[in-house]
Length: 352
Image: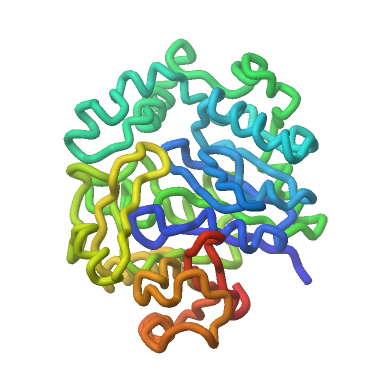
């Protein structure tokens, strides 16, 4: 089979469960690439332990895979080093498989101080995580080496100089020539795109499939598949973070489900906002990304009895009807469904 590229893109405002989905399909890809920044955390369960990744691709669980931090990303050296050190405890080969583009951006701590984390003006005004990613990207645009660093100038400070790669676009092109499938692990969601989202309540970069290809240095035609990850009840981060269709309280969600539910963001730990399914939001994500398949997560929010289910036949009629509605409405196969539970179960329904 010819090697190809799959872009994994959030359909809404982030926190759709991309980490769980990437973990579920990790062994189908010989190369895993992440760009974006640490303002997005992807989590999954591996051998009973929860892993929260802000930099290293979730596909590290595939011990045969090459891992790439792409040129278009902005990465905090302390966070990358911490994640590598934790992974190294269970996989001593991690540094041999990790390639950090020498020209990727460095997210120095001063950028987070500039934005003020979650107590800064940017968080107050638009609900930003305040991790400094936007400030770092602005500094890169100014093209002043005194204000912005590249990874080739910082990797040795955290003991990761051996992981530097001078040209990851060429590395990815060679991997495809060698028959290795590539997964691009997108961050945040289509509804947060700087260009296509509800400005100014957006992130500091585009978040869609074409931008992922550009950020990692692959021609757009190489992205042959797009997996759009959507959750049944979209969320936004805490604070004044922008429009959210049919917003609910977590008390109301808990009453509907007959059990207490509440979500906090991976990065800021603040309570998320939650709303009901939004057809218009999905319309836009489908239009911009042209998905070849969809992963639908949080099916247990449709019916509590479906929590942790691992077989399609065991799901409630309500959950299956919702999946079929998506397939009819957008004409795209729902290839994966997430049902939550202690292991964050995922049911495979077909090809990606």
